[in-house]
Amino acid sequence: MAEMKMEGVEYDERMEELEKLEHPKPNREFIYSTFNNFAARQPWVGQEKHPPEIHCAGDVRGIPILRRLHQAV
Image (cartoon, rainbow, N blue to C red; front, side, top):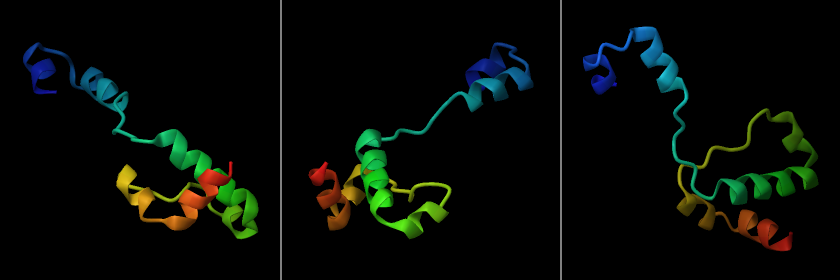
């Protein structure tokens, strides 16, 4: 951002570029497919709009149910 500011890029353009960035999502496919498998077997999960937030891939290893569900696929 500072570099773009120094180059004279307008504020709105810098904000547009910032919106294009995403935070790292390690093991994204594993997490989403595992959650979707779990949700398919649990009717109450359909009430949620978003999958549970997992901050790093290491968090998944600590959740045995998610590991088992993923292995069952």
